[in-house]
Amino acid sequence: MTTVYENAAVFTGDQHAPIGEAVAVDSGRILAVGEASAVLEIAGDSAQRIDLEGGLLAPGFVEGHTHMMMLGQTLDKVQLRDCTSLEEIQERLALKRQEQPEAPCVLGSGWMFDAIPGERPTADMIDEVVSDVPVLLDSNDVHSAWVNTAALEAMGITEATPNPHGGEIVRNGQGQATGFLLENAAIEYAWSYLESVTTDEDRDRFLDSAFRVYLENGVTSATDMAVGETEAATFRRRLERDGRLPFPVTAHWLLRPTGDPTRDLAAVARAAEVRDQFADLAGSEWFRIVGVKFILDGVIDACTAAMRDPYVDGTHAGPIWSFESAAPVAVAADAHGLELAMHAIGDHASEIALDLVAECVRVNGPRIRSPRIEHLESVTDETIARMAGLGVVASMQPVHCDPAIMGNWMTVLGGQRAESGFPWQKFRKAGVHIALGTDAPTAPHQMSHNLFIALTTRSALEPGDSSYHPERAFTPAQALGALTHTSALAGGFADGIGRITPGGRANLVVLDVDPFSDDQDRLLEAQVRATFVDGEVVWRNTDSVVDG
Image (cartoon, rainbow, N blue to C red; front, side, top):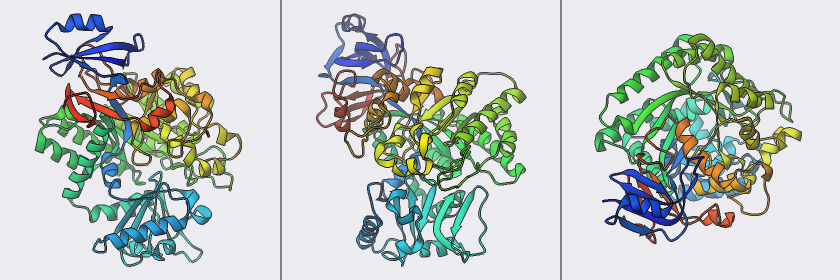
């Protein structure tokens, strides 16, 4: 049956005709979009008509950068993002331990550096309230782990334990681990320990939870930006169980530097092998590995992002991958047809990222590519111009510049650098395509909050008048396009995903707010009325006029 959805602002994702009045859907595909009279004529008299009663009908959001299993797991953890003091953090940890006295460990997520005295957490701060079981707390950016003494012991970290390549076990003057693990040390020890106490049943539940909360927020496609063996196996189990996923997912295989060129190249070969294995599975269109992910540097809050000039305190972190170590790996990945995604927050790291893209072109020759740089929080004008020339997508996250979480970020950068971050308007002016995502769980996964910050540069966590350079904000069409069509292109999606176009898949979202005409503050309370995948209502609000 053909169904016509009308009486809402229709954002099509088409830059030439971005706004319509109605959409007709038939057999999971878009039949027509445009003026209501024209759509109704194409749909015919027998079409079912649904009055959306205002609001917005748009392509389903395409989550441009996420970590789905980690998001699902984080939903089970003690939430610490809104804690403003060590005492608040300790209270929540103690309460969690009281509520779950039989739990083998306590897990938390989202702590802010601003809440920690001296901005350097230690194990004894946690030991004061929970000392009998391991406690592992992910930082807000998920690039650091804060653990207690029991966790250090469980992970086998001693004075003799070496720092892993690209990471640091922070130590005191006596050489003892303090309980603060940076970058690859967090991955090598904290995450590996967590993996050892997690079951496949847990992992399946985490993935199910991530799909659920994304559908509730109008997401109908996502790019998972750091998969490995465990994540791939979990997606595979879901495909084998159901023959499909709740919505299509593309993924980038995480490459971690080992210091051994042979092992690094073997990781690329493995990424290509797993990609090809998934391509042979039934339901392969629902999950595809499209590229690899390099984490070139850390984060500004921990002073581990690779900057041209030192931080205010004199810290001058180097990259996690140097150009020399990453170049042969990137060239090999490119030769396998794997797209490059490169985490680069600091201005020096983004220079390395572009050098890697240029090296791939030099060695492997010109072809259609879709390289992307993730985050780009502090970046030079020269780098932006080079990105335009090389066709590199800027993958950015408005929720990372929520003014409520930028205090420490601005302090450690200092001066003009602190006022020059997240230069969205410069990317637009240079002609660089911008894809928007949330990087959940490093930031809230709610797409309406991401959209609100993109439109206003104001805080969604602590609503008020404070903003971070509103002259850089997006227009509604620019922001919605970056949250749908551009994110789809950057993520390797096709078949009409990210647009409402005749013949394309009917992956749609209905919001009760129209950002083109309503007060933008309404986005903070926006409700998803319904989410569609292939024309089927896969989630609906209980008050929705859309039948499910």
